[in-house]
Image 1 (cartoon, rainbow, N blue to C red):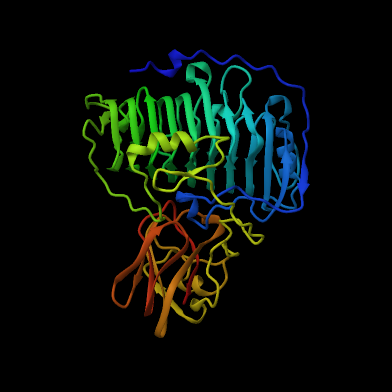
Image 2: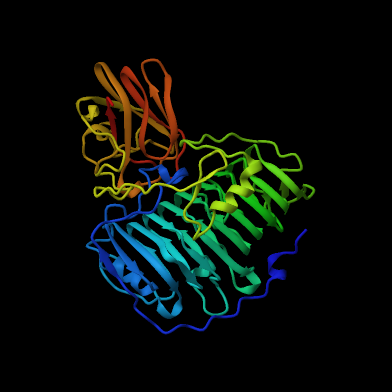
Length: 517
């Protein structure tokens, strides 16, 4: 067994600051977008499209990235920022403006939406400068390297996180990134990929996380359970002490990842969390799955994984490993389509696809790397959490609910069933508690195949799991998690019910729209 990273690696030598330079910010006549499309939970809640449809600029410094953000017409104006070169403390300054909230020494994506940051050309390296996402939505980060971000010593950035998300973050897709440190907490480093304080609908794909004490967490404490709906797929975790990830509350889908050299523990599901762990390859590691360092249990559903030279601790106290023969102790329903590679080929396919500067190659589901096609631009792409504007792939045609009635289970004081079918996204219905149901109904049978649920802006992301029911028969039409669009076989009915079975906070349904197709 390998020794912990904190012992094997010395602290990285502080890099002398380069001369400050503003860097180039050049507009191009046509917008571009991140290559390929979002996957996993980032496809839910309206989808993640980043800056698609906005103008494209080129930046070679951190200051130039901030200038691009601050130069937009508003904080939600779509933009694609192509980054080439090294971003460091010497060239990352605060820039002010009405469409941004930036800071020196960190790439600050705060109180903004509809942004893509993508490495191009010779590559984009964020050297000792972390990327912080806060109170933001619809963000794509692709084809970048973030290295040696420290929380202590010098210089410091982003609390020691390579990429950190906190405070009401929605819809983030990080893809083909390389996130690395040079030691553990005693050397000044923290997590490589952290989510806390109500961060939801995130996907980390085709990325490398290595040489760190901590891979990443979902939830900052046992009481921070407002995070979740996170997908990890086709990533390499290499030489990591623990937290691959640490999951407190919420749901994670973890598939087709290669874990090599997890020194203390791996996937740590605790505090009521549920993880679906499919077709991963674990090797030369210890305690790769279980509940560790707490007596508050978490849960997992496992299938198709390979455990190659994995050792397991004996259970007891605050140690509850899933092995040596991991068995499922929960079930997790996944609302999106995905294709699993066989676990036996995961080390090979991940080695050829994961990380920055690999040509953005992806697996075809048959263990064969493919070059993705560009995602078409969409000049009408909105902020995913904006309930007043349809998002990409949303239904068109007549909203049948406008001519219908409504009823439901007990409603919260001051709300109305009719608010979900009045066409006004500023009004809403709330259940009396965390769960409940609301229905749309017609006087005669009406054919429906598509439903769009829109949350009130102030409550975006609160809806968790749900079912759509044919209220005439009680049959389940479809189920899933998070607000957005759902389709099912066209059904003729007089009444359709949206039943919320799980939530974070009191849900607020602004509109329950129904469409024939």
